[in-house]
Length: 226
Image (cartoon, rainbow, N blue to C red):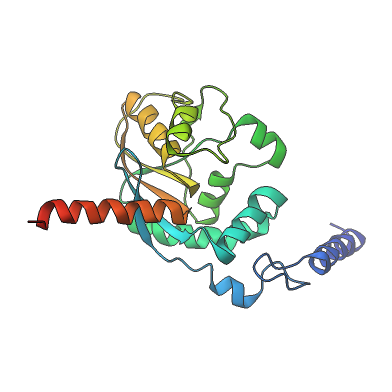
C-alpha cells in the first residue's frame, strides 16, 4: 500500500475522530472518553424471561451503557462494539462451559439498514465464535412500545433453526426487555433438538430487572411465609 493511500486513510480517521463525540457525556473529539469507558465494565446480574429461562446480563440498560448501545445500533458506531463486547465476554466466559453460542437472528430489514448483525458483532468482539443456528421464519412488527404479552405474540413463531442438532446452547442478544425474544429463540432451538441452558445479554432493561426482583420476592414469600 503506497504512502499517499496511508495518508488518505489517516486523514479520514482523524476527520472521523474530530467529528465524533462520546455517547455517554457528549465530549467532542473522542469516540468514548475514559470516564464513560469505565462505566461499560461488566456489572453482572441475573433476570428471567417470562418462561423462566435464566438470563445473565452484563450491563443495565440505562445511563451511559444504554446510550453507547443505541449509538452502536442506530448510528453505526461499530467501534463501540469493542468495549461493549469486552463486557459481554466477561459474562460469556463465566457461563459458556461446552455450549455453543447462538446469537438471536437479525431481521433482513435491520441487516440491510445497518450492514451488520449486532449480536454477532458483539460475540466476535467478545473473542468468541457465533454459531448462526437461528434464522428468521417470518417478519415481525416493531417491538418498541409493546408490553409483555404483545411482545410475546409479536415474536411467536418468528424463528426457526437452520439445521437440526443436539447438545447445549447459550442464546445471546444485545438487549433484553421482556425476554419474549429469548423465549422464542429457545423454543425454536428445542424444536430442532438443541438444549438451551441459559441466555446471555449485553444489557437488561430496568423494567425486566424489577420484574425479576418481584418474582424473587413472591417466591421467597411462598417458601418462608406463614
